[in-house]
Image (cartoon, rainbow, N blue to C red; front, side):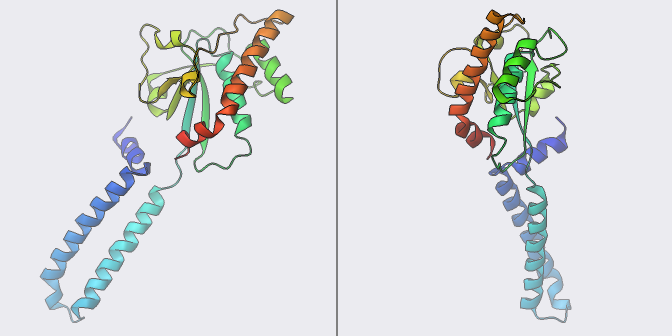
Length: 232
């Protein structure tokens, strides 16, 4: 992450932005007082008028900077599974539907990422089928699995992993302050079991339906908690 992006993250944080603004005010105030003492005697206007103009200009300029800097930043939620075709795209679709009519303070981008390797270049048939049956929309028609990268983890505000084994994958590291098992994040125990392998038979579809219903139940009953964490 570049220096500019790091600064913007601090600037858009509700706490750090106030610290930075306070430092700017203090620095400008010191500068204006120094200039005022040095040049005020040579200016025809009364000192109180000059001081008022300087302070007013400083405050107005700072207001414009703060207003520009506090454009709502897009928050990023990442769901992680193994192959990127089943659990994480279903979780993404379910979350998007749950938030569809909610007005958030920040735009939210929901990503479905795989640790890899990716098993196929699209959502599994069964995942696509059960989500279509659940919402009467083919929400996973355009899903393309993508492998989680270091940049993805740095950019994410919250990473929810489907099962414990993924966290223990050799060579894969997650930032601990923002990475959680999905069910544990919501105060529950256990994993979201991988319904793979894919298929069109009744047994496979039933397995995927059970997984989708569990995701909908867990996320749906805890959507307020998810919003409270992401929508600061």
